[in-house]
Amino acid sequence: MIDWFISAAHAAAAEGGHGGHEFNPMHQFIIQRLFDISLFGYKVPFTNSALWMVMATTFMTGLLLYSTQKASPVPSRLQSFGEITYEFIANMVRQNAGNAGMKYFPVIFTIFLFVLSLNMIGMIPIPGLGEFTVTSHIIITFALAAFVFIGVTLIGIFKHGFGFLKLFVPSGVPIWLLPLITVIEIISYFTRPISLSVRLFANMMAGHTMLAVFASFVVGLGIIGGWVPFIFMVLLMGLEVLIAFLQAYVFAVLSSIYLNDALHAAEH
Amino acid sequence: MDPAAAKLIGAGLACSALIGAGVGIGSIFGNFLQGALRNPTAAPGQFPNLLLGFALAEATGLFGLVIALILLFVF
Image (tube, each protein chain N blue to C red):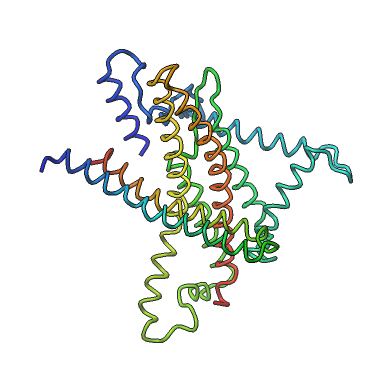
């Protein structure tokens, strides 16, 4: 998908001809190679995507480490931020996957914070580097979703053995309906990574494309007429911050629901 | 028909998936308000479920948008 965007952007740039001043809402999704790292004789390109991931990870790790540095019974503002974040996801995992699922809480917490910080940092344009949202590329979200899918399937198989296949055969279904239901269940199980990744990617990409289109209205209408789309854009920005949080939350909730399915497959 | 025109029409038609997303989001918030006005004390506890339903309904419409983008940029 990235290649199509890049080729579309390059095509648009070639049509415009006068060097980067023409507008393309897909231009923001281009991955640029910043420099190469040589690793075991291979050249590993360090892209702006990687830079944003490093920023998000350092920011979140630093924030959580710093907020729990001087823990006191009466939490400071920063400490209660860390505690609320932890409690929020811990309660969510406990509700959706039960106490057995709390063993896998660190993974889900990490996934949530990673996606959340990438979505949020993607909203902020940085001078000199521009703006980039890592989660607006399907390869990133698909890698995350495939990691969740394979991990959850392995947990289910190790825990239940052949009993894991009971997940596809729900109890209490009339016997003549069972073949159909089983096929549907298997298909829905294997489309999980696709729907999980496309949901996050499509939300992020559609939101940022919409913001770019509205920004072009502001520029196009000039200083007199541009205020109307500008006000609208401020409101849209608020919606995008909500979506950025919600999509990270939905990713975490669905991961823990899938985990619940795998942990309690035999009780279906 | 000109293939380029058919591509654009198809992409536009694929965006009609957003009709379903609009209906879904409206129904989620409408039903939440109905329930919340009947029993205001229970409403805050269901707020995460409201947001989850909103996000799931919205994503379904965006799948149509992805199909539109695939039509535009791949074929």
